[in-house]
Amino acid sequence: MAIIDPRHAARQLIYERVFRSATLTAAILVLLILGGVSLSLLRGAWPAVSHFGLSFVTREVWNPVTDQYGALAPIYGTIVTSLIAMVLAVPTGFGIALFLTELCPPLLKRPIGVAVELLAAVPSIIFGIWGLFVLAPLLQRHVQPWLIQHFSHIPGVGKLFMGPPYGIGILTAGVVLAIMVLPFIAATMRDVFDTVPPMLKESGYGLGATTWEVIWKVVVPHSRVGIVGGVMLGLGRALGETMAVTFVIGNAHRISSSLLAPGTTISSSIANEFTEAVGDLYTSSLIALGLLLFIITFAVIAVAQAMLRGLERRAVSSV
Amino acid sequence: MNRRTFRKMKNGAFLGLSLIATLIGLACLTAILWTLVSHGVAGMSTQLFTQMTPPPGSKGGLLNAIYGSAIMTLLGILIGWPIGVLAGTYLAEYGRDSRLSTAIRFINDVLLSAPSIIIGLFIYETVVVRMGHFSALAGALALAVLAIPITLRVTEDMLNLVPIGLKDSSAALGAYPWRTTLSVLYPAARSGIVTGLLLAIARISGETAPLLFTALNNQFWSKDLLAPMANLPVVIFQFALSPYKDWQNLAWAGALIITATILILSISARVLLALLQGKQGAGR
Image (cartoon, rainbow over all chains, first blue to last red; front, side, top):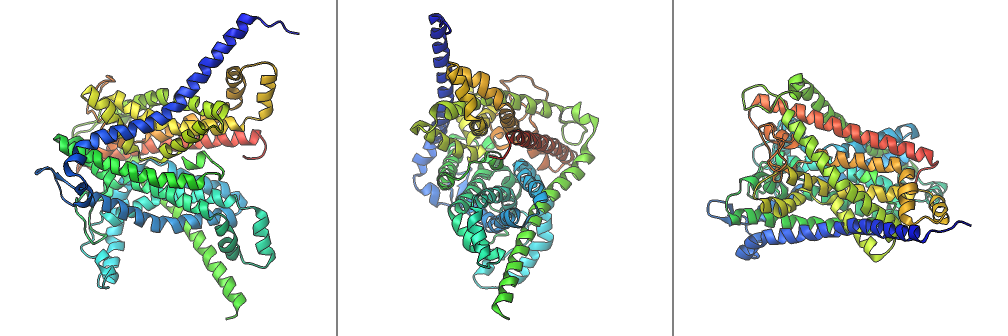
């Protein structure tokens, strides 16, 4: 039997306490960061919030000269660009996830999966310059004239496609966002589809169902919660995305009925104007925009995480 | 048309659509990489790595921006990575299923997806306003805050992969948890933890939004951590949006450098992870 030196044991206990407190402190720091973010945004936004009150979120005016600020145009732009992104990215992401889990030859499964994940690793500023120099001219020359020609005279819907094809604008920003969130949605859905027990699928096939019927009637119902969670996670990304949008949105503080017109989003307003903002009220209004964005994205991401909870957590694919 | 044919056709149509969706995804990646390479290579030269960012209309390089990005990323990692690893260790080894750990895990997942521009505003309010001016240090702190969630997540996942028998053996020998963690768990999860490091570097080295109003930018060579410092993402942002052809070319070259760096880091992380999983037999 080993002889235990009491001093050695005491020292071990001290090391243990030190190490434990170090890890605990680091863990609590994560909570403090969130608290610090909320508090500092609240404090920075306070002058604007107390000055404009609720009218801050209901007015469209944004005029640094007369010091009048309203967040309606950025809020509108943020929501509409994100909606366009989701309309385009959700079906495409679903298709990719479906292809990867059900159709893809095993040999190609990993390379294609990794390629989609690499798209997620490309920094947002790259999407921004690509959107400005490649995608915007492409849409301007080929897609937008077609939209104007075929849709602008339809009553109701037509309003969305009126005006000249600028290239940059709400629609282009939505398309760039769609490409950016696509890998997140595809990767989450793929992971969710992978959790469906093979037995369930085999039972479907055993009854003579086609691949699509198994997917639509077995896989999708089984992974419903995870699918919605993945979509919400993508939405959270789209709402807060800054650089990619800033390049192609056109930065106009107004609400146009046309999707082809330039607009602005919360994050691109902050990115464009923050360093140039003169005066406390201007800066504070921009921080108030940040606070709004923080509240919206926090809610969306929190719901997404709550829904994805319990499903297998995969670190790498969500980066 | 009988029902069977209809079902078969419907099946074929949807599977075809899913193939098209995948091709669209791959086409986007290819298009972006192709644009980057074709524009970026044209701007590549040795000047890029030996000269400072030029005023409009004259030739120059990106040396100060590359240096600034490297320094701020390094500092950000030096601050953020240890915190992330320690916090991940707490969740995996001490906290486990306690209420505090559940809350931290949840908040961390939220921070992982939170818009980075918000973090920039946070550091602006807490650091830049206090100091009275923009600085490289503030930029590094913003990057550190962004590096923590991803490091924490990967570290916790990787520590949970270590076979429980190893931990039990160490405990049976009378080792305290700290000893077990340092001498058994960390070495066993080494490649996983390095993966986390690579992913954290990849995550923060392309970040632009949080640097816009923390580190700002600097036209000149600066080593002063307390002064504004040039960095690749912000230089790309400014130069790409400028009307000058020289600047735009530099922006493309910078974009190629950043993307290549990040893709190499991400691919290495995946290769490491694949090796790790191979070593442990089946996947997770």
